[in-house]
Amino acid sequence: MDKKDRFFNERNGADALSCFLIGAAFFLVILFLIAQWNYLTLIALIPIGFAIFRILSKNLERREKENEAFVRFFRSLSGRCRLTRDRVRDRKTHVYFRCGCCERWIRVERGQGEVEVTCPGCHTVSRLDTGSPKTEKDEAEEPETARRG
Ligand SMILES: [Zn+2]
Image (cartoon, rainbow, N blue to C red; front, side, top):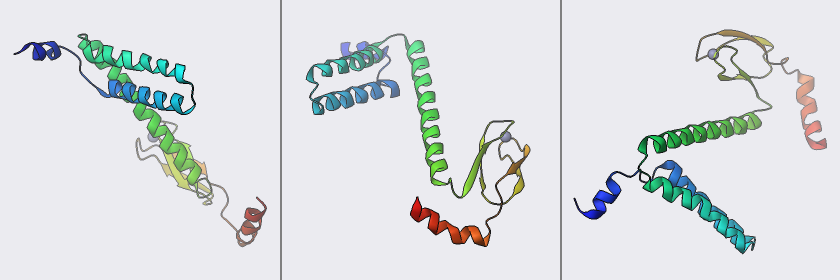
């Protein structure tokens, strides 16, 4: 084993959090240069410094915990973004509600009146009002309100 191998062998190395920090630093540099806040590009040194510290750190246990927490947070954030996007997209056609037992989000088609819904996660049955079914009058009025709105 040569000197270089020995140096990197017991270090944490690049993980998801370190890569994210470096990416964030590049993003900040580009943003501040576009905005012509050139002196603020020094702020990008903070995430780069933290990334270098993490990559070279020998405290593997602690770095792994930080990385796991970051990955968990990132996953929940991206899941929440996806849910919000779907709820906005489906707002006219579907009702979203949370299972009272396991808190899982469930999507049900609108306009079916009161229905019984079985949670796919924990199989708890809940009653849900999905709104009254559309009448022919509602259908006829819809284009009118769309034009006004
Ligand atoms: Zn459930």
